[in-house]
Image (cartoon, rainbow, N blue to C red; front, side, top):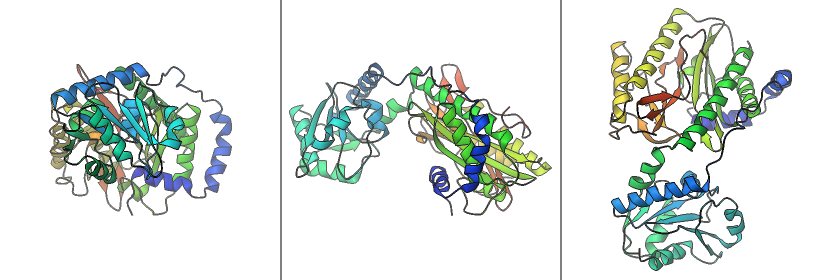
Length: 417
């Protein structure tokens, strides 16, 4: 049974965990010594969002797109500040190629939506017996954009696109990726700063948690410690996946019972948010001492991670980073390609407001690395029935090349450096 790590971690933490409660009670005096390290951060403000809109509108002009439709979710937050969940009732933004955006939302939700709206925008509301799609079509007609291509943000649900097509017959529907992806992939200094702080929180939580891992603990116990430390340090826990022994060969989780014991691999994959921006760090260590096979695989992974970082230079295709790691692993007898034992997933993914964002460090990805892009670097190696090793640190591309958010460890005996 394979689950996404976030789904797996959430499910695990939702289960009754009496032992985890006991672990936390015992750790309370130590937790009290941790201090919030996020106090110096600043949320993304209106000026930054206006700059994002201006960049998007320039790309819309360059790509011949008249407007972009964005539904509730991270892209809506990114451009407007609105934090709103998805339901059967459509809340959306229409970004026009010129002028202020329009927000469409149910009448009774308008006051709540306005609480996080962070830019100048027109708000149009629809009643329960009315169509939000008609409002979108009306806005496009009024702005004389009804005959221009309408870009659809890639996560917008089908009913919203279909509704627009019926409300605006003949509308030319196109992908908004050349606009939304292009803007969101290039992080600005304020975004980088928040991601750095989120990573600092996660590393500090690891440093506090690692020496408190004890024989007999279950994944939920360790995750509870990690989450408690993250909160005390000022972060909002996003996921805390803990895999022990043979379960570590399942990259995103296993239902098999797991418990810390001498000579067992412990793989932790954890992240948090600070002002909405994410961290993602994995560490692998051995409780009670590693054997030679574990040491070899750990070092192989460390070498693969270093190679990925070295390869990730300005102008290099994102897929070339994955290719370099996979070629190296194949010289060691892993694979080939995605076969096990070896690396069964991509080398890395984009990260920002979302834990996983375009584009990925994966074979065939031709997007060239550019300043401001942020990625995870996590070329794990998995040996089914035995164990797995994953080291994950994120980096961002600067004018002079890649720069770590967190510095990778150099030894399995000192997994936090």
